[in-house]
Image (cartoon, rainbow, N blue to C red):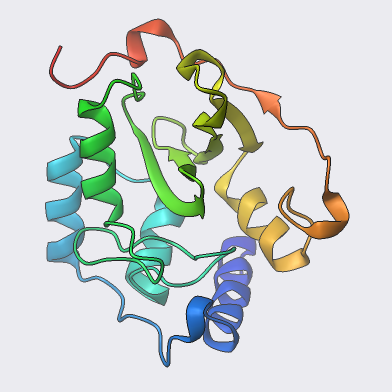
Length: 183
């Protein structure tokens, strides 16, 4: 079994064992048609591991805190819109949301874990806008989606109580990546 397969097996087991907000069961995985519609709406492809999470484990509802957002349709357990809908709305907002950076999980207080889909391994970023300045709202959460999922499974993420005060490095999107969709 490859490392990726081992990770997916661990995620699947944890997803079945614990779900946010007491959901009775995980949403069904998305099919190839839903994935194709999502990628067409976004205008970019998703990294392979993110595709595997949505197509093999479930359409959101698992992961740290509130869990992954649904991919294309519906609401998360915390009432957040699907990832595609949130991405498109943020691209239209005044935040200068970067192209190809898909919000996948809501932390509350307008904070999101986001996958930089322009990177092969899906670097995970934290969008934390509560300081009010969009130039200082982005941080590197994990170098890869694999590392982000492993931190969740191992209980070593910045959001864990024992890691209170853990500093995340700022992320600077290239200026050409932060123009909104309507510009």
